[in-house]
Structure formats: C-alpha cells, structure tokens
Image (cartoon, rainbow, N blue to C red; front, side, top):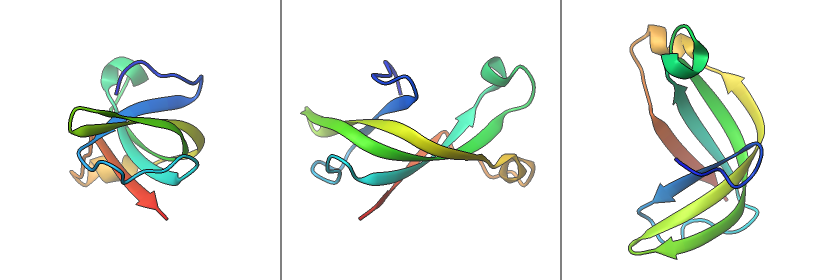
Length: 90
C-alpha cells in the first residue's frame, strides 16, 4: 500500500479484476510495524469505502477511505499476523 489518495485512506492492489465497485464496503486487517507504533506491532481492522479503482496490468488498484477501525493486538499475541487482508462485503 502506497501513495494514499485520501487523508484517512489506503491504496491497495488486488489480483481479482472487477471484484470491487465504487462505494463498496470492504474490511482490511493491517499490521502496523514497530516503526509506526513506536512499540509493539499492532493489528487494526479497518472498515473502508471504495472511492476509486483502476485496472493496472492484471491487477485492480483500489483506493478506499477508512470509515472505522478497531485494534486487534490480541491476534498478534496468539501468533496470527496479516500484513494486509481485504474482505469485500457485497
């Protein structure tokens, strides 16, 4: 994820062209590294709204605005990690 196009958003790539539509609600699980938190790695579940998408090669680039989030640091203590997962709720 790079180059956020919104103040509270993310840009992500998907190998599933056409899976996302504008205004879809998606959920992301992000792992924030120690460099960001200043302490332990932390996982955050974010509910986000797709604001734009474009096809780039065989991938779909999705820009989503985060609407809500919840810290899931208990997952890390159980050894469950995710750098970025995305679930589309249609």
